[in-house]
Image 1 (cartoon, rainbow, N blue to C red):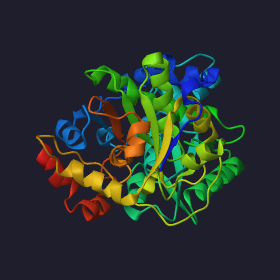
Image 2 (cartoon, helix red, strand yellow):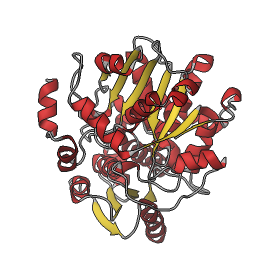
Image 3 (cartoon, rainbow, N blue to C red):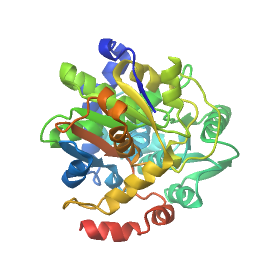
Length: 398
């Protein structure tokens, strides 16, 4: 299902705070942070020439975030970065001077971090990032996971020394519980979703994601004409859409936000013209995107910078995983997790619908960019859906 943003022809300027957070200055800030990370390398941009020909478009490039900072997901850029910024600010308040990224592991900063506890709710990947960030600076982390988070994903978070708290219900229930407990105990919540009076930290998380598109614009042979990016609460889609609008201006690509059909809170917000919470239904295979309450901050950006919103069915996501794992036309194999391929699944779905294809002006000359937001963060589930292990797929690409 596709919905064209009625304001697309008259896109409003971004809110000044959002423009500052997600524009060039924000991308510069995350770039400085990553320059101090010994494990940082820009993630690969994969040219999928064979798949582009199969789909009938001019070019298709995918950013492989499964190789980001050892966490297997784009989320590595958000939570850990926000933790680092908050620790540096706290150290500055304690010592009466500013601290730069290069001082993050200094004794003065670590002594402050040792007294801080960072908490968040997660579907799996954001919690790993917050836990990794806390471990890097010597802080404590407590991560709240709901009933749909697999044991494998919870264990991957715990490996960074995080305390895991199980919460009955959905992701949105775990967000509420994390905020409640953190407020009672004086912990700092590092959430990737916002609420009334809580925007700055989710803004820092989103700022981290601008590294993806800053890198991609430097790697691409030509700017894309179309971009498809998935949404959970909306953070990554908002970060990329905003940065593209600010960096490319009138030359910005047609930007489509993709939701799982079974958890389409951004799509339904677009239909309503305001952020709305939707009911909890049948679980989606795209578990990392199973969110029912959008981030108001992300929505504020997307209503001004997205051209279209769409939903994609679970079976198309599984098909997209398999297309990447079993490439055609000389393309490299790519390990794309069930949530990581949602943007690609949206492209496939749109191209199969003549009305959607026409509305988005997709044709044989289109240059499309997608983000594979995660690899096989649950290897067992990946093997079940693809019929190959992540190692077998990676072996094809080697």
